[in-house]
Amino acid sequence: MRALALRLPIALAVLLLLVPGWVATGRVAAATATIVALTPPLASSGAYTQAHAINAAGRIVGAGTVAIAPDGTQTYRAMVWGPDGVGTVLPAPPGGGQDSSDANAIGTDGHIVGVDYGNHHATLWRDGAAIDLGTLKAGDAGYSLANGINASGQIVGLSTVFPNGAPGDYEHAALWDGATRTDLGTFASDNSGSSQAFGINDTGQIVGYAATPPSPRIDSGTPHAALWHAGTLTDLGTLKPDNTGYSLAYAINARAQIAGEAQNTDNKDHATIWADGMKIDLGIPAGFLQSGANALNNRGQVVGGAQDPDPHKSRAYLWQGGVATDLNTLLPEGSGWVLVAATGINDAGQIIGNGTYQGATRGFVLTLPATPAPSPSPSPMPGTTFADVPMGYWAYSQIEAFARRGITTGCDTKLYCPERGVTRAEMAVFVDRTLGYGTPATPASQAFNDVPPDYWAYAYIGQFATLGITTGCGGTEFCPDRGVTRAEMAAFLIRALKQQQITPATPTFADVPADYPQYGYIEALYKSGVTTGCGTNAQGLLIFCPDRGVTRAEMAVFIIRAFP
Image (cartoon, rainbow, N blue to C red):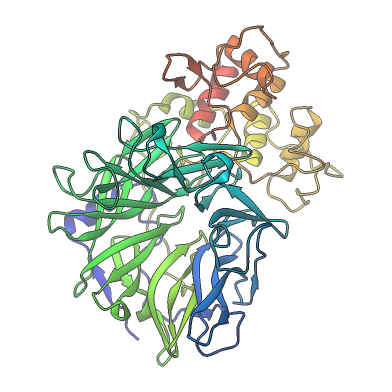
């Protein structure tokens, strides 16, 4: 079957080419993809499954039918499936009932978040148990749900709140970070109105929506796509020149590229990407009413759907290289499938979504056919090492020094990925190379159970431990793929510098009290001149943002300052 490829306007295709990494894989070939149905736990013709998210390992989460009442009412439960489509029903949390539940996101470590409707609370499934995350209200009153989780275990979603003692109830975007729950607020000066967070990347950048004044409630106001980062809420705007209309942001990748939908001058919803300060209209495929982008991976491949007034005529789409492809055109003839919407994609190119299979509603996982060789990598400008770090970039000089000294060769051919988060494994490599251990000797044994001998940074992590810079993340584990926080970075750098902790009686940073675990390391890093913090709070006091992730650009700056 010939793929239906809808080309974007020439001007837009050129704009896409300007986004680093956007044209990474070229056009999808007109060939047959492999598709697997996600099986429901109930063997009944009326049972259904839905797929909501997929992680790097190909684990898929969503929901499936567990019971059908005589009147046809269905009870569905949160589920997790392997790439083979075989699933497991997730347990109810303590206090939850046998009502329905839903799994909305899965982390790199397999931790799952969603909602249990027994108490209508955000729920975390970890190590075989369900954990009630509670709400932003006293006594865990009201309701909440969780939509996203990153490698550091930070969870985002929404919760009902009573802002400023107001009698009305609002839904606010919420962040769960360990035992801390944070109301992310809204665009309104008095924090009234509604908001919701859908996604979070490993550097702690959060996306979703917030309603705009003067009508801040979603049921009467206008939501705008929103980005929360380092205590700042940014209105991402719409595709209209005057920024009116509505928009939503659903996902953010490691490069800080954001996928969602926004109204254009035709007052229709268009699949949209926000990247490098640009708003990119992915267009509406011919014959459809509107479109939306639901997810994207770190290669810049975007998935979502094109909607029709008749939902049965909506179709799942993939956007890449300036081309929109109906995923149904990649299926074998007579497959029995109609793919309605794509909801997730990982870096391996596995796509999940929902559709109908032989008349039954099913989630799916689709593996694309082999694609042509990648387009040529973008070329750096004269005088630069990396195509995505131009001379005007704020950390240009430090990243160039990073490359000249052999500390990094980038994240890909001719790319550095400056806005991508740094993992603990990458931190070990950067620090080892900075200290002159370009190729550490492979240790006879590794101190950490989660770093096997065939792990790519095995020798570097072993050297990191031998130098006394790390003792792991707890027990006998190193958590190599977890993002590095600013607090951890401070501890690593001070140990690498062989400096002592400093514990002044009065903390320098308002958000790092004297009893904070890395207090002495953060104060020593400040004293050494490596950091001045991440900004100031509402009272004008310095803050450090200790639990925020560190980007590759920030890491280059910190290391070059520490080791000039």
